[in-house]
Image 1 (cartoon, rainbow, N blue to C red):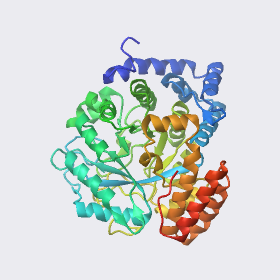
Image 2 (cartoon, rainbow, N blue to C red):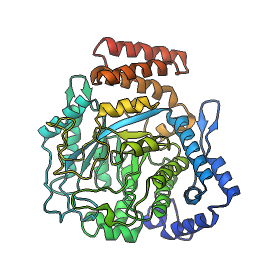
Image 3 (cartoon, rainbow, N blue to C red):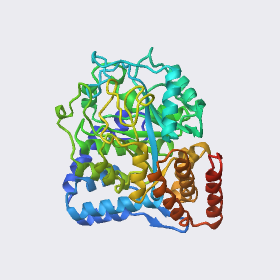
Length: 485
């Protein structure tokens, strides 16, 4: 394609509409070409090496062929390979996090979000620093170590100075044995200078959902406000990485536009980051449009069913094998359980999407006046942790790579060589032990200690295993915390 250039800094050249349409046409024409499909599947499979596994990944066009194929046997192979890849690079660990909403003041007119400027009946709220502290303590008392902060776009209510002050407050709160060790940031597209400030504040991943890669739909869905600028929004990750942020997280809101178009655009964005910066996205989120105040998802005609949603997730895992995939509490327990076997590596737990939704509320109380969307999985963090373990997963509260400087290309090089497994597994078990000691219910402790004991024996290096056992014994015997490899 003459206009398609993954190395271009121009949004409409690395997310090229003509290339996407050609890709979808090619996928439709070849969706029953079993020889080609088998070749693509073989390319996607993880290959064993002396040090671990390697994966070739797939191009946006190859992955689109798999997504278009509706042969049941092929779909089963896609799911099988997705699970193989996830286990090869992430093991049976599932990273746990929670969102923290700072403010719902917003000047944008996004038609799918209840925070849009014209919504005059939703309560508007912005946390003070004392309220931020209270929210952090409530989250620490649940057991969380990793947060994703969220805020609407508003130049005077939510300037970058406010966000930076909140980050500083979050990191400053030390309550009992609780600490927030990683703050990921999901705020509006901004300048290189502001991204440098976020980097200096010690953020983990900078997250920004594209919402839709279809430019015409994007402009219609964002009719007013700074977010209306498609190019500025789409090129934000390049500015973030130019500003020194190593880890960025992509995502689209499935249900706004035709899913095959979004899927191709999402993978092209990942290819662009790899081509320009030498490292693809650290994470990809897969949210679906959900009901919210004055937002009816049935008003949008591009919704996807659970089967399609699972296949999209699995195909993303095949295409970008080293990237974390995030599923939130937008989805219910059944869908989340299914997607865990499709390559998901991070889940939220005990989430509230309200501004000030944690402090002062019991596990069963949920404020709705400032909620961004309905939370489908309303279980407590303790219930989510126990559920994960009962289904063969290790809930991980680990943030070691971020704090040891294993970010960006350094993280990816370790992941691609398989070396990341030498530290992630014991780190997960040590942080799980912290959770069990400090926050878990008796029922969760009973399940959890058995899991830790069993999983310790799976650590291949005897020296690492011994150190992990000693650290876990120290966690149980004292208030010593935050051991890491």
